[in-house]
Image (cartoon, rainbow, N blue to C red; front, side, top):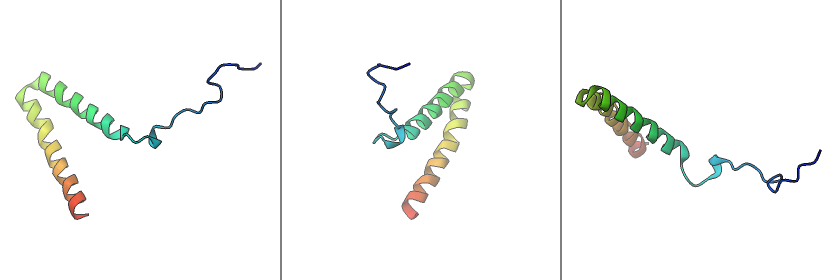
Length: 68
C-alpha cells in the first residue's frame, strides 16, 4: 500500500536544531506556573517561598557564568 500524502518524505523537525532555546522557555513557564499557583493558594508567603530559592539559584548561576 502506497502513501501519496504530500508530507510523506518530509522529516520531522528537531527542536534541538532551532535557534530558539526551547528548554529554557519550558523551564520558565513551569516556574511561572508554580509561582502563580503558590501565590494564589498561600498569598504572600507562597510568593516569598518560591521567589527566595529562585533568587538564590539565579545568583548561583550568575556566579558560575561570571567566574567560570
